[in-house]
Image (cartoon, rainbow, N blue to C red; front, side):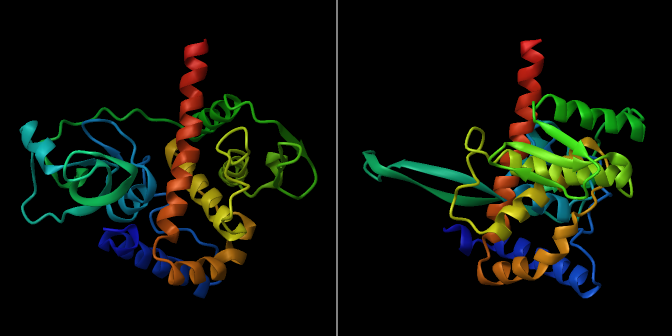
Length: 283
């Protein structure tokens, strides 16, 4: 079944449209209801795999907990889930490389298979986690380290504009004290880093045929995900509100628009996380 025909994709699209319209009608930038209420990105309880693509956005809109598990994994680990708890459906890509006779296909194709998962809040018998208190200052230090390990060229001045310059391959930011909060500074910086990863020497995304509005949505989603990953509050960029109508039009014309944007945003997050691992190994 094609991505556009999947019920999971259509339901996510409807949730995002409703969320964006609510913000637009209130003359606000798009800031989904789950922002600020999550302790991190959604992940598989047993594999520790952080959800990617549209699945991450499905989980953030749906689950109160960032932990998720399949029913088979729960049974295998002798855990159960609350009676009457609602399953959330996600999509798994399946690559077909052979035909029905076992011969290699000239061109393999991918289809998406839906599968259900249980949110951590509905899992019975999970051991109590020792929650380590992390201050806001410590979270900001984590963000600083995350950014430093990327090797991004960051130029800070008193000029009011925030932007990524592809030709010079650098990010310009006003100094932190020019923002309403330190979290707002990092939210914007994460957005610009999202653009920075699109350079041809990294994820090679900026020269694609996708629209400018699509790239802005990718960067904004990446900023939301990175804010959740670090544990700070996400604050939308000033441009966010100006793109709402363009985003809504695209979502209404293409049910896969948000899923694809989230997939690209996930690649941004993975690139940044992988860079941290590489720095540790180099050390």
